[in-house]
Image 1 (tube, helix red, strand yellow):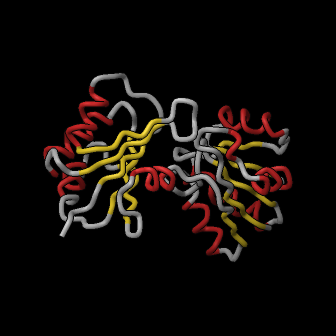
Image 2 (tube, one colour):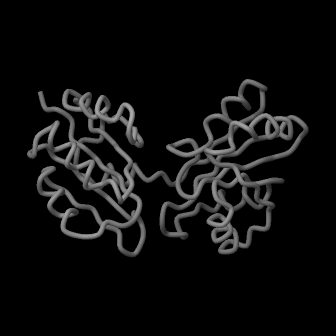
Length: 223
């Protein structure tokens, strides 16, 4: 019995690792965030392992049954639509319960959107804090108002539909001159990174339709 967490490409299918493909071919079952999305990857690499839906809306209801299957000797891999399971995606709950039951867990190294975005930003990457998606409603203003005094580089995930609103909120709380970098469509054909002050990057994205997955890298407070 073993549980694997297998990173999948955040954009370009060629970013899948050889070992990731080998593991997905060898396990008994793959838990996929969206089986329709994952079938594209499976077909690309000729992976015929059975898929089962496992996402944020059913993970609490299904985790006990999955753990029982692992204890019975089933080898299972978890994948998400893109990136590493557990990083703003399902995975943590199952890992926690598997560890409690003494089940072997292994996370393979591989794609995670914030790493290339952080390196590409040109902002300090020796010390950083990953904030993931900020709350959409309740607690959002509290979270944003806590950012100005953070001295580490900050990493935020955001929907393309809310990016302009987020930049406006950051400008209001941190000021127009704070440095920021926004990466979208990482590793895809139309990948883009916009760097500058919040005001400059806001003007850039406010003038066009924003598409793709978004990673915002925000400069920390300088001493």
